[in-house]
Length: 110
Length: 194
Image (cartoon, rainbow over all chains, first blue to last red; front, side, top):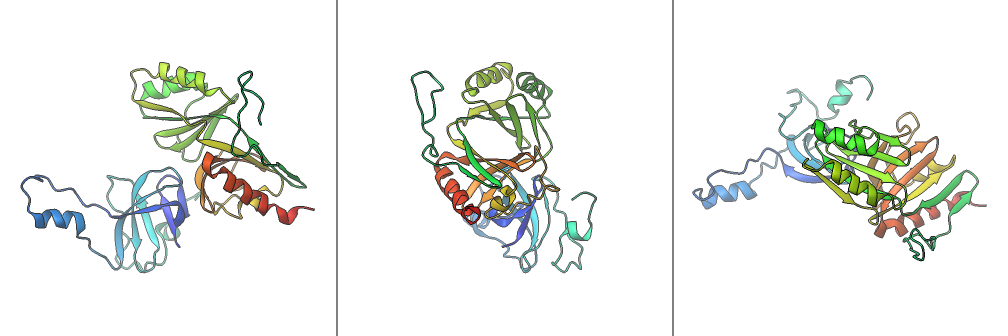
């Protein structure tokens, strides 16, 4: 089990959330024309990333809202989360995947 | 059975048959039949926010996990476009009608949840010790302050919890899960029973 950061409610236990798979997969346009291969890629093909991964989560037991997050798939440490429509907050190139952004760049208060 | 809200009519909740826990430092009771309403809309829409404030008597809270109170009406931030409203038992009917009238023509959802949930009040100096047995939320008085409220989990149950004041918490639970949560609370309190 690990901690997930809701952009609104803050850091909570993973059990409060549900996972929604890889983020930023756009539904193809022109669905009448595209090939079965392209359609299949949209539905089934995922990166299976080892390392920094942008993914979707929903705060099921809390505010019930969907958001995106950047997590290290080896250490399960979440770098940061961001609202739908925003750009992914990429961790530094040399990020070791052991500390979240809030731990490395603490802001006042939280 | 709880006494009639409407004359001649009695009603039960899933917790009607339970015995309230009253021990040194801990009290567990039900607040049955509170009126509960979900209100959804765009807080940034002045027409929506102003109309809601006029009916509720208090502005919709916009900070995550915050709440506002006016008399018997408690308004909780549930999400950036959703609020949970509690009012006195059977007070929801008029409030819903008033909200719908005031928000006529404005994008909104007003839904009666009164019989979908019930509320358990846990109070006393041991309340935090009891709640942390199943809830991972940081309930320390420095981190969870009066008026704060949030949805979270209590073991297998999904709950909505708020700190009323001091060490008095109100926990909202689905009707069908109330029996489970109550028994968990009662069992958790046994270590402090005489």
